Image (cartoon, rainbow, N blue to C red; front, top):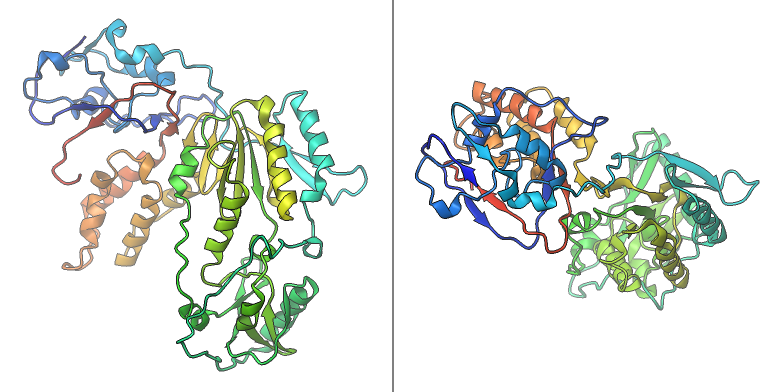
Length: 495
C-alpha cells in the first residue's frame, strides 16, 4: 500500500472513475527532453496532494501522482520515473510498493512509437518529367508501404490540381450556397470607394484572375452592391476581399454545428500513419445558387461583377462547407477520418491499412469533383500539425509556435498587454496544470475596478508560467477498458 508518515493539514484527495480523459506525460525522450525545473522539490510537490488530516485506511491504496500531472492518471510509459521520484523523505516518509500499485499493470505500455512532433518529408513527382507536379510523403516510411503509397498517389493524381483553371467545381445538384435573404430588409447599394493607383492596379489584376478562373461573372441590375477591400499580405502582395457587411446582416444565421476542435484532435492520437489533406481553394469549389449570385455584386473598374462560386466573407459559407463534407464523408468521420471545414485528416491505427483508407477518401472526392491542393497535403506521416496542435501516435502536444510566442514576450506594460497574454495562455489551457492558479495575478491585474498595475506578484507569475511552458506534457489516448484516475485538489482561489 501507500503509507503516509507525518500527516499535514489541508487538502483532500479524491479518487473518481472517468470514461474519457487523457493521460499527461512529461518529456523523457532524449531528443526532446527539457531540463526539469528544480526550484520545487518532489516532496513539496507531492505534499500539495496529501492531506494533513487523517485518511481512512480504505484510501491507503490510492496511487500517488506528480502534481504537474493534474486530473489524470500517470502515463504508464513514465511510471517507473514517477515511482523513482517518489522516494522517502524526512518530510513525508512516502513508501511505494509497486506490486500493490494499480498503475503497475500498465507499466509495460512501451510499444508506442515516440514520433517526432514534426516529421521529415520526401518530395515525389506524379510523373517522371513534369517536376512542377510534386507531392509530399513521409520520409520515414518503410518498404513496401513507401513504394505502394507512391504508386497509389501517382495513379490517383486526378484528385489534385496545380492551378485554379483546372478546378471543376462541385455539381450544384450536390451542393450550393444559399443566402436566404430576409425579404423584409431593404437592399443596400454601398457608396463606391476610391482607391489610389497602386490599389486600383492590384484590384484589376485580382478581378482579372477571378474572371479567368470563372469564379465571377458580369452582373446586371444588381440590387445589392458591395465595395472591394484590398488587404496587404505579409509577402507584400494584395488580397482582395469584399465588404459584405450589409448583405450579411440580411442573412439569417445557419446554425449547422461546426465540430469541436478538442474532440477532433483527441481522436487523432494513437495512429501509426496519418495523411493531412487540404482542398484547393475550398470555398471556391462550391457554386452559388443562381438566385443568389447577383446579390454578391461588387464594384470594379470594368463594371459590376458577382460571384458564381462561394467566396470568403459570405455569412454561413463555413456552415455550407461543413454540411457538404459531413455528407460526403459521413461513414468515415470518427473512424478513419476527421474533417474540419476544408482541413481533412486520414488516420490508420495500422500502417498497412493506410492506402486502403486513402482510397476510400479519394473515391468520394472523385464522386463529388472536389480536388486537393498538393502543396498543402502530406501523406503517410506519423505526426504533424492539425488544427493548431501537434498530433502523433504518441499523443497530442502543444504547438511549439504558440509556446515560443509567449516565451518571447516581454512583461506587459498595459491592460491590453495582459489581456493578450491571458488570451495566448487560454489556447494552451489543457496542457497547463492548475492554469487558473498560475494566472490568478494576471486576472487580478485586469479587474475593471482598479487601475492597471504590474506588481511583483504578476512578474513572479509571469516568470513561473514561462518555466511551466518549457516542460508541457503530452496528452495520450487511454487504452480500451483501462481504469483511469482523476485527482482533484482543493483550491482557495480557483475551481
